[in-house]
Image (cartoon, rainbow, N blue to C red):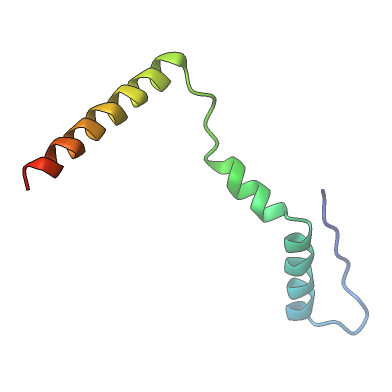
Length: 69
């Protein structure tokens, strides 16, 4: 997963940085770092149940609004 870039003989710093960025994108390093940055653990049964009840409540409200418009 590690990306190593060594400066070539006649290479400018800008080209070195550009080559490094391309290799990190190709190795999907940044994508993995960003996805793990805000990773949260698995949901507990209680949280899953509360979210389901909340969805059901709002679903009922939307159904009622259909008839009272």
